[in-house]
Image (cartoon, rainbow, N blue to C red; front, side):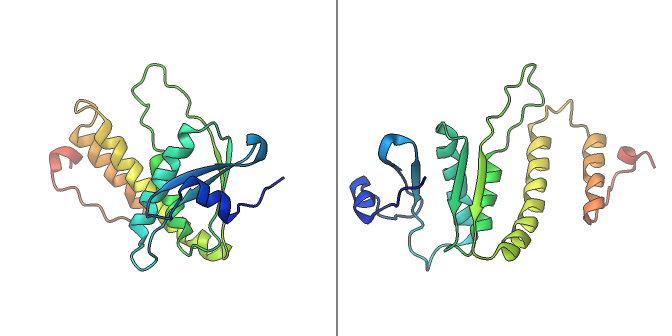
Length: 175
């Protein structure tokens, strides 16, 4: 099953824990890989940096042949922010491609110390990610596809999420 990562193996990779650094260890036989993500000094780490590190980690995972990844976030209080970065990095805009390639699916499990708290944090971050995806989708559309009318309709659809929307131009709404 699993091989313990030793300090000697970590030292052999030259991994120092520098913020944002990623090193890869191979277990005996090469069947299991361990990615080490450097977080740097705890005093300066914040949610935005963790999201960025999550995005960097996603890029590394995307380049690998991994089909499933487990992230040990038991000692990381802000593991949901890391997951948030992973999710934001996974965004793809394929709507206008005539033959879109299916995204490679990688299963990701994040082990956390407090599941309930992590789920609550992740739910809030997922709402933010949905808004980011909408904004990215809208800005990726050609101007001919994103008319003032369609933009107003997309904004009004956010009302079901509790967002207050006011459309100022009566030409757009037809009212």
